[in-house]
Figure (tube, rainbow, N blue to C red):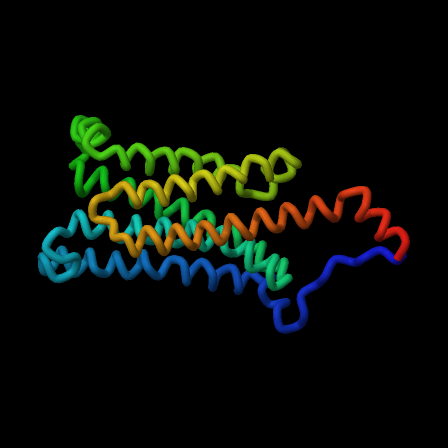
Length: 227
């Protein structure tokens, strides 16, 4: 039996490997942040016009919303690449992941500055009054080693352990959902929507794991050897 060669992207998808494509992905992911910066500028010039009656809450909420959106998009990249057999998309997963981490950090920074007023006593008090903050902070702590080790150099150093380490992103994604669900202002629709998306992503990964194990099983190898 002839060895199966790894699939290469067709001419229409080859451009996804280019630096231009990576820049485009990065620019698209930065648009929500740039729009928010513009609203902050408007708010400074005309209070209430850019971020509404409670600018601090609005700033934190919008950064939090895009944190979970980009984090789930990061997981979606892997699923789409497998389902539609476009492995070249995986090259952009790091960009999505780093932007997700950036939004989470900005979300925390906005809370610490706009809501807590740089007062650690307020933060400590909120830990007991609003336990969802601890859950969100836990998600951020899990993302830190993933952001640090996202480079190819770290991937080579860690070898097979790199994949094991980066599976932590699933736990971080679940904590992000719990962080959203625990907030009083969170609507049932938001929780249901993001929960459904995460469930679908988890199911796709379980199906992929089962498929890979079947391919590696002795029975599957025996059948393959007779073809």
